[in-house]
Length: 216
Image (cartoon, rainbow, N blue to C red; front, side, top):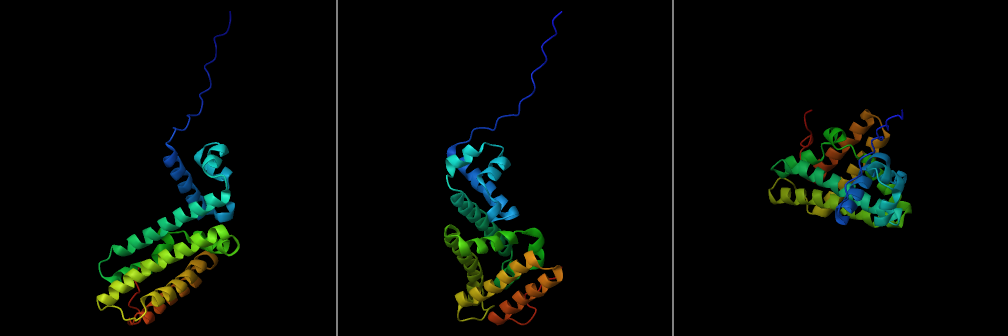
């Protein structure tokens, strides 16, 4: 008596077909998340394809060059990170309280853990022209966030500076040092630099010492 046919092996569900614009956005978002977690130089068309569960050919259909995908992925991740940073500050009403939240690196280290994104981006910008323009644009975005708070604080009589952009640039420069420390150093060393950022901002804006400190 012939054996009954065995039931076919269940196949993996096929990914839903997406409109081109939506698929491209999905690829860029995935590239950004991978860059933030594993670094710029580890991103490949294959790594994005594997993360999405699609063929590499689908990724290369939208991005022939890995350089283009790296740049767009970094831009997406960087803008998202800075927008979250800005939104976190804007929860407060007064400019001095917004700046305090903006520079609260003890909390940021846990809630916005993306320092590798920036350190890797700066390094790539030094040697890879396709990244330099985007990294500079992101740094300008960060400076604009700080400048907006400082300008509002000057108007409200909370800050004292005659050079909003200059003060924002110097505060941002010390903030970059915190980012490097977050990747490279121990908690103790990181906190020393984080406190230096607060002290720098207080001096720049005519604030009393410890004004920007927070209780944790």
